[in-house]
Amino acid sequence: MIDIGLISVVVSAVSLSVAASYYVMNIKNAQKNMRTTLETRQAQLFMQIYSSFHEEEFFEKFTNILSWKWKDYDDFMGKYGYRADPKAWRTFGSVGAFFEGIGVLVHRGLIDVDLVGELLSRHIVFFWDKIKPISLEMRRRLEVPVDVWLEYLYNEVKPVMSKQRLD
View 1 (cartoon, rainbow, N blue to C red):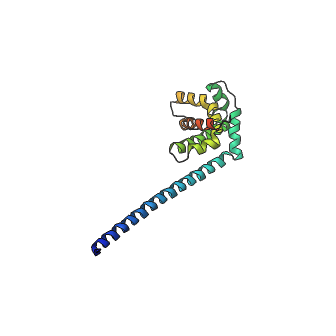
View 2: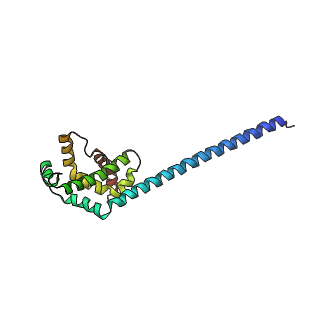
């Protein structure tokens, strides 16, 4: 015959197993929801940044810089530096700061580098390739970390860009 105590133990064990399974299932579901929420927030943040980049005034600054010509750092400062052309200097700073900010966000994991790279890699690469000699010389002369997050961003998105190339 089945003992009441044995039934009680079996029911308790089954109840405990069901509760533990339900708890584990809820934790996995919560983690999935948190991951989805994080990805959605990253996408929203990046799209705000991306739309700022494509505002006419900002995009004009960016394309304007790409058309600038100089021989070396001194020539650059003579044409576009803060004393020679304050508006050009602010343009240079504005675009550089934009990419620096994205670099910090990527570094901190607040925006996925693949998302940035898939939409902005060519712009980041074109910009860094254009201003790299100026930024490196500024670092040397001023002994300050100029455009380090832009360079970091460049190094992070370069592989993403190479994956995008068509055969």
